[in-house]
Amino acid sequence: MQPYAPNWTHVTEFVIVGFAGVHEARPLFFTLFLTMYLFTLVENLAIIVVVALDHRLRRPMYFFLTHLSCLEIWYTSVTVPKMLAGFIGVGGGKNISYAGCLSQLFIFTFLGATECFLLAAMAYDRYVAICMPLRYAALVSWGACVRLAAACWLAGLLTPVLPIYLMSQLTFCGPNVIDHFFCDASPLLALSCSDVTLKETTDFLVSLAVLLASSTVISVSYGNIVWTLLHIHSAAERRKAFSTCAAHLTVVSLFYGTLFFMYVRTKVASSVNFNKVVSVFYSIVTPMLNPLIYSLRNREVKGALGRALSLRSWKGQQ
Image 1 (cartoon, rainbow, N blue to C red):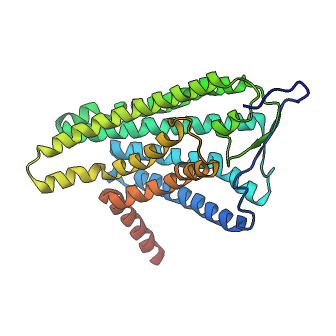
Image 2: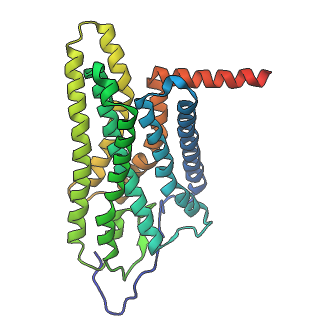
Image 3: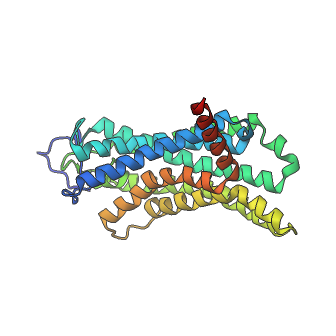
C-alpha cells in the first residue's frame, strides 16, 4: 500500500511493466509466447472440433472437456494478446485503463474459478463412471451435465464479484506501474493508497473457498476411485479403469499445484520475478499442455484425432 498524499491525483491508467528485465531478448520472448498462444488456440480448437464431429466422443466426459477447451482459449486470450502488444509496443502497448484493468482481473478470476469447478465436475463424472457404473446413465444424464456445467460457469461468474467491488472502492493516487504482465490482484494492491486489509482478507477467503470446495470434490471422488480400483481383482481391468482418469488427474495436479502456491500462500516475501514465472505457468503453459495431456493420455481422443487427420488426408487425395 502506498501512503496517501493530498497533492496526488487519482490514477486513470496503469502501465503494465511485463518482463522489463529482458530488453535484448524481447524478440525471443515475443516469438516464444506468440507460438505458445497460437499452439494453445489450435490445440483446444482441435479438441472442440473433434469432439463435435466424432459420435464416439459424444459422452459426458467429453462434453465437459469441450467446456474446458473453450475456457482455456478465453483464459489465455484475456492476458496474452495484451502482453504481446507490450513486447512490441502496439495497440497502446503497455498502457491499460483503470476500467480495462479491473475488467481484465474480473474475467481472469471468473475463468480461473470456473476451471476449478469444471475440473471438480469432471472428477465427479469419473467417480460415478468407475464406482457406480450401473447408475451412470441416470446420475450423469445429458440434462444433469448441462445443469452441472451451467452451475460451474455461474459459480465462477459470481466468484470475483465481491473482490472486484472491493478493489473498485480502493483509491489509486500514486505510482501507476504494475510490476506484472497483467492486472493481477497482488501488484494492484501494492499501488493502492487505501487500507487494503479487508481486500486482502476477502481475496484470501474467496480463493481458499473456491480451491477447497473444488479440491474437496476432486479428493473425495478420487479417494473413492482408488478404493474401488483396489477391489478390482484383474490388473488389466484396473489399468483400463485408471486410464480413463489419468489425463484428468495430471491436469488437476498441474493446475491446482500452481494456484495453491500463488493464491493461498502466506505473506512470506517472495521474488516478483518468480511470481511472474509461476503466473506464466498456470495462465499460459498449463492451457497449452492440457490438450496435449488429454490427447496423449486418452486413447479415445487419440483415436478420434487420428481418424480426423486420416479423413482429411483421404479427401485431399481425391
